Image (cartoon, rainbow, N blue to C red; front, side, top):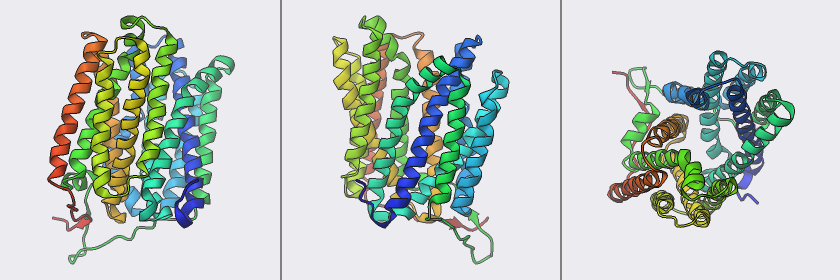
Amino acid sequence: MLNVGPGRRDLIVALVGRTVSTFGDGVALVALALRIQADGAQPWEIALLLGAGGIPQLLFARRIGRLADTNDSRRLLVAGGLAEVAATIPLIFLHSLALILPLLAVLGAATGLTAATWSALIPRMVGEDHLPEAISAQQSLSVLALVGAPAVGGLLAGAFGTGLPVAIDAATYVVVTFAAILVRTRRKPERMSTTEGQTEIRSGFAILRADSVLAPLLAGVALVVLMVGMVDVVLVFLVRETLHAGGVWYGLSEASWMAGMVGGSLGAARVGSERGRIRATVAGAALACAGVAGFAVAPTVAILVPLSVLGGVGNGYAGACLSTLLLARTPDSARGRISAAANAVLGGAQGASLILGGLVGSVLSPRAIYAIGGLLGLSAAGAVAVTTARSLGQKPEVGLEPTT
């Protein structure tokens, strides 16, 4: 049971709506990939499909964050939800990638706006003291939704065609929009002014760069995302060609990592101090990369399951603790910008990992890729540990600056 004080009702409504929407996104993306593949799409076209939604979040992160911090949260969530529905409905019928990609870009921009707005709203719902539990619950549910979504998307597409899974996704956007209406907590930022009567809102990237703890932590976790995502591309080759195992073991390895992430996310809620969360983020990132490095020397395929659980636990701890730190170390007035910037950094790393994995997979063996990814990630975690150890307890001033 969630122990988040008086905001429990609003948090449950928000988590249910967002989890349903995350599940719908996973279902629809699989269906769209199957659709264009059946129409003769090349691998690079599949990559474009998978990455189209993340590009707007990266390009428009500053604008998204500014909107989230200077407008009423309910209006943004409802408007963003309606935009998501409007962008998804045509995808039920379209087969041309040239038409699908712009709609996915619109969908990605709207999703980026609602994600930043929800993230900034959660502390208002539950209070600062219950933020770790709320973040932990959110991440755990998101992971669980992503575990089942690909299988459901494939089954529905095979049984009823690819239109139904996309229609379900559109319906889930209606659900999360309705959830935004039901949530009583609202965030209505007041615009601050300087003595000259003019203001310039600092971007989330500028705020992150000014924080001597968050900057290296986010960079380190982004590198881990890049490394783990890169090796994900070659996991199937490690299982099938290097270790000569069947597809069941590939699925078990993937599921074990997700199971570990759920456990790590739940465990992160028990970390009770900022210093502890900083250390847990670094240790979690190192543990994830240690699991990845272990794949490089795995003598049998069965070893991949405990290694995946180990890596997933670290991944879950690092993700949940970092998300909590991002919000806890940022004033309420800047949380939309911070969330948008962090989503852009981590989403960009995830997108780059797909490209990098495809490139190195064509010239290096799966074991070599796992060794490189794991060791580079461990090196990054060590560097972050040294950097943050010098900066513990520092909290930079964040807010509005006068226009120059």
